[in-house]
Structure formats: structure tokens, C-alpha cells
Length: 209
Image (cartoon, rainbow, N blue to C red; front, side, top):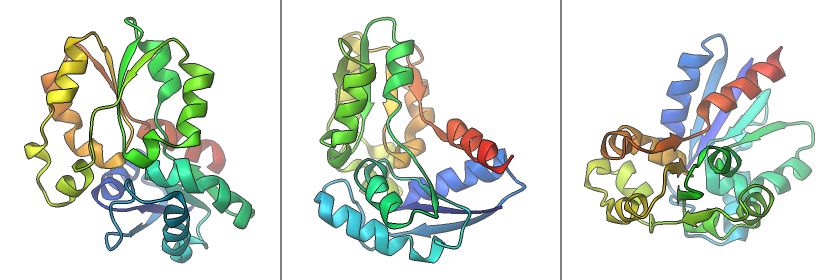
């Protein structure tokens, strides 16, 4: 099966690498829109237009994966309406699993500004995480730093403060942040670090079977 993967930078490449390892029987085509990255500080209208333009080479694929939480939360519904014959699978913050796993009722969400302020995130929180405290550290510079190879220079003081205050689950709400997953695991071994790559792989397998 031919699978298309779209992202704005390093995150898409990290997702493609993981999916190829998990599901090597499929063929993968990756489109990265570095020219307009990052999407996280753009308007909803810009994000929809840029995502639509970027995925054009992938429309012949059986599945298009939006390996970008920002594009998923803002653009996936308009794209599904525009291309009803295309199967879209999106990455979005794992609010439901985080709310289920947290023992302290306190989680840390690492996400772009666009994702933080999206209707989709509000809906996920309303449905699954009422009564859960959700800290959202400032990550505005992170995606660009990761694309520039500066992941180790990202300051995690706000994450540390959140964990020190009782957060026991950290949600990676941007695929770029896979680049710092091991660092987060090392610094905060008491926390569960959530990202949805294995869930996406299962959805692909379910569709292919």
C-alpha cells in the first residue's frame, strides 16, 4: 500500500522512519513543507491553504498521514470534505490517554500555539479531560530549533516546573518533539511520555487488512 506522509519539517521524517520500521511492507512518500515552516504561529486560513497545497503530490496515495498536529487540528476536516475519496489520518494530542493515565490529574501538553488554541483541542479536553489540570509550556521556538539541529539547546525550565508541581504525564503534541523524547524520558523518568506513532501504525494496519 502506498502511504503519503506530510509535515513541515523534521517531525515528518521521524514519523516516516518509525512507520517504516513498524510497517515495512508499505511504500512511503514524504512531503515536507520547510519553506513555510513553522505552521504553529500561522492563522487557520493559512494553515488550511498551505496544507492543501503541500499534499497535492500525495493525492494518489491510499492513505495520507498528516504528521503535524497543527495541520491535523486545523485542516483535516476541510481536507476530508474537499477530498472525500482520500483516507486522511492525523496526529493530534493524546488528551484522552493522558487523562486516563494521570494519577495526579495533572498533565503537561507540549504543543504549538495553533494547536493550543484550536477548536479540536478544546473539544478533546471538554470530552476527555474535564477536571484535569493541563500545563502548556511556551514551545514557540522549538520546531524551528529542532529543524536547525538545536534540539539539545531547547530550554525545558517550564516543563521542569510543571513536573515539579505534580504533572505525571507529558504529551508530545507536535511530531517535531519526537526529537527530544529521549531527553524528556531521561530528565523526567517519573512521567509517562505520550506520542501517537504506534496508534497511527495500528490504524494503518486496520485499514490495510
